[in-house]
Image 1 (cartoon, rainbow, N blue to C red):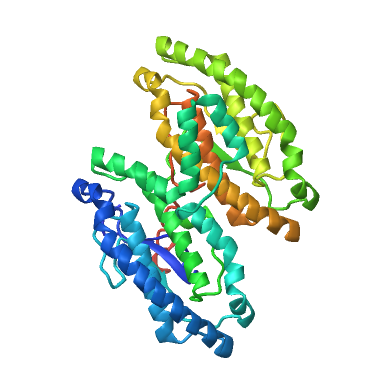
Image 2: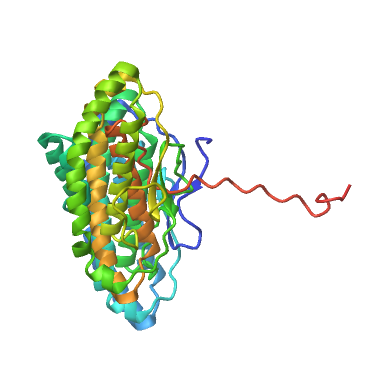
Length: 446
């Protein structure tokens, strides 16, 4: 893509839209090395501006309660703060390279487009702080909030790595996604001078959701934030990978099974723990054979693949991403949220010998995404009990998290030597539509 091409991260109908104004992944090693120090003036200014913005937002709240619409001047002041905070976040988390200005002016590589004031419901404005809490909790998990580990993934962790990696996993889940992304990207950029594409796209998606949540809280819009990964599709890539996620589930949820979901999952949690013990020995045998022959034996590949599929099914059930009770065999195509795993292929012996160490960055990011899974499961639990449905955005985001986890553990267990891809999308980038020829030139005009 041309460096100056403009790619939007959301449909035009959304009042707060993340925009990527270039696709340049190059980064200056010098400014990246000192990025946190360079960002200090911006962190001070964003804090001061934020205090003023929250005070002004109270005036905005009163104006909407009285008139049902925000005054343009006050709206623009708060919008400027939100745009500037997004610029600072993109710079701090290495999603963008240029040093941002202090005015929040449009034109930064990772930018916001915020619509003009529109009429808002007085009722939703009156209860805005309460209504915004679920979105703010999810934004915190995506952008640096505290979250705990996930039961399904912690059982994978206990069976596939030592205590030091497990401690790192729990630390990652407490830091939040963008913090872990920035930590990993920092080392990658110092080594290569470029930001990994998947990490950049994941950070941009998290910043975009945080901007939606902030804009909703600050009364710039009464459109509730969307967590659907399709918002990242216009600027993200999804390359071919041997491990893919298939989402064929509907959004209906039985209130009864939702209410007792954790109790219903106990047999699966016991079984996956027992299966994990066998997987530990199978993975060790596969490692030895792959070092000698460059391939994992077919029987071991099928056994390990069934385990990764089963863990994906269980994770989908526990976190309400999937609707129905899964089977215990991890059979391909047996669950509506499924991991498709390609047949075995030759693997690099160098990657195989250092596989555990190479997988540590992916395990850290998988831990952070596990925290997101836990948060969205809690939010979806309450929503499904009331409505009998799973929010589509939460379902799709959960599926994207499960996809990355499946790729991570498939890599660790030698099912593939393709590294996990972090972009939070479920479908490839849509192809641009070609303009239709004029009517006089179309069809059989000649």
